[in-house]
Image 1 (cartoon, rainbow, N blue to C red):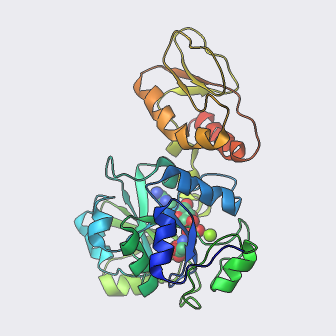
Image 2: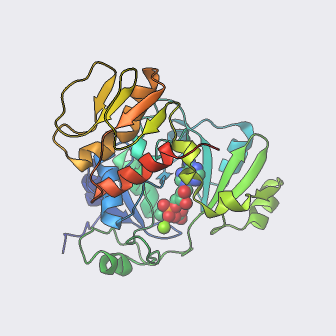
Length: 310
Ligand code: TXA
Ligand code: MG
């Protein structure tokens, strides 16, 4: 059993130190990490056993914090008037917003919410940074609505700030702002009807494909401009994304982890793809990555990036 944080301050100290801490929100318990710390965010995926980098919801203490992360159109601002609340907004990310690439799965949008729970708000404020948090359950299990369920789910290995049972018990509603339209990507704790009534703005349903697949999982979202060749050695004129101990080659090259550390490789994946793309090669040869541990997630992302483009 891990030591349980007995106060918001103790929980905040864990998070500031790059550790995970589960915390209550009004919807479900979240497995929180400092969203600006790539290693901390990677621990979320490892701890949940989440097979791929599904983008995470970024939890903010107030609108000022949220505005450092995303661009708010007038319509987005109007929806944000429902915060704090069980509503997540998908908005264009601000460049250089400090979020770890793995938290947003390298997308140029970001999902944000301000939870309506006094402990969650106090915790985020005490950390002073946005918190990435999926539901605090092992992948494939039910979302937890009590601290006890979190402890049981992770066999006591994850510290939990206990705030009693969650009020909503179902995850937040996810809304994407698309120009002058609101599109619901996930039904959740606030109904479409309630949002429409409170804002006086219609909320459309996402196309079936968008709603079913986590929107971030579409291959084209992850694809760099360059094409990818996987499990490959670089040829002249290509860029090379290497892994493990390899010699320099003549062209643009990044090494995900010279020591063959998959954790380091996962942390570097999106940013190095961005950098090689910026180097302008039409093709990026990607070294073989072992398909174990975090390698599964890395290969999943690489396969999506290399998939034929629609
Ligand atoms: O109530 C909740 O929303 C809980 C509490 C802890 O806040 N969190 C939660 O997180 O349910 P999670 O990881 O289970 O769901 C996150 C969802 C995923 O379906 C993901 O695809 C979507 O949010 N998402 C995140 N970023 C996105 C983005 N940029 N565009 C579209 N969808 C996004
Ligand atoms: Mg979940």
